[in-house]
Image (cartoon, rainbow, N blue to C red; front, side, top):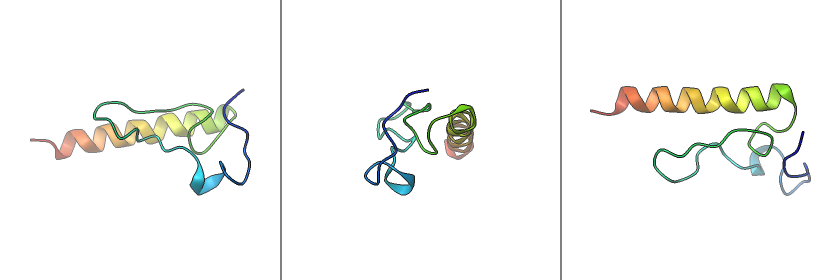
Length: 60
């Protein structure tokens, strides 16, 4: 398990988003919200999945 240390500067709503700001580039893993651990990594991947599939439905 890795990622940035969960300090006040990098915890909860200050953590890195799965949205990179670049079209087609999504982030998931220990450093991305909701954080480290098997459950956190899995949930970050789920956030990416939901974002990708919802964007597909809104594109022409």
